[in-house]
Length: 194
Figure 1: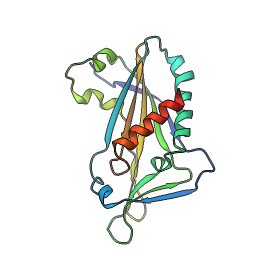
Figure 2 (figure 1 turned 135 degrees about the horizontal axis):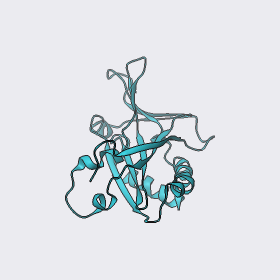
Figure 3 (figure 1 turned 45 degrees about the vertical axis):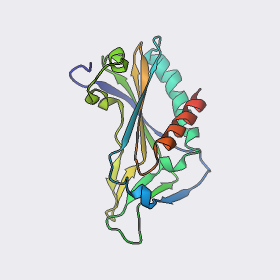
């Protein structure tokens, strides 16, 4: 069960970017079926990896660099996920789109659990979903000068549970891709990290 106080401590905030030289700009207009999901809440997924001998040093020096480097390579095949969902203030000739411009990135939070019970979280019993909220990131939102809403499409968080394992939290915008898209992205990321 989560202790009182802050359940996790942020160790680092990184930005994952597609390898340089691929494209400088890519725009994907949302289809009618994508727009149906425009104002739906983001999808949050959480995967736990049990590694009893994991230490903070091992996590920071070996696991995080592999995950970060493989994430950058994975974005080569999923460039729009590094972009932003742009929602104009009024519907007209500008329809919502996912826009990637060179320099856009996916936020990656590296955190450590503060005495959360790993075994309790992964056990096969009923739990309150709020116990997991600190393990998944939020999408970054802002507004530009024209009044358009800019939202990141994907956000990631890797949380260490010392001497127990780690979790990877994935938050994605439903208008940017279905479950199959994010599942394939996760599989390629895992393959490249291996």
